Length: 174
Image 1: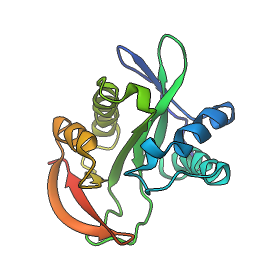
Image 2: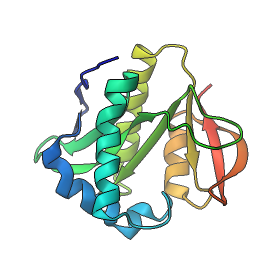
Image 3: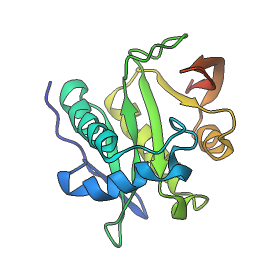
């Protein structure tokens, strides 16, 4: 399956496909310990960020859905990323075959509604383009900001489990 990445505009943002020239900003995002505190727990190296960027690009080609680069509509600055993936995680209960929803943003936009605005747009795309597919997400129980975003976005807790030895909460949109 091959798919071009749709562009989504919100009042403040443009969600678009990742590009190779996003790499430096992408690598800086994932090297930030504030960003990775609840997503993997450790800042990523440039090499790890490169693999992540390529995974985002390839997910669209393989699955017909994926993550968007989230940019500021006025400046074009990369603020973060959000979207769907299916990572074949070794997790019980399984998330395979679902639109696993995720998001991550630069710290200076935390608390400004950017995540909620983005996730709302992502969910709307998923509902329109993958009707009937379950939407799920995993959130570290200590990540209160993402727990709020998930709640505002209609996700409800369905299980508590562990992933890579750490506690996590599994959410699903009804």
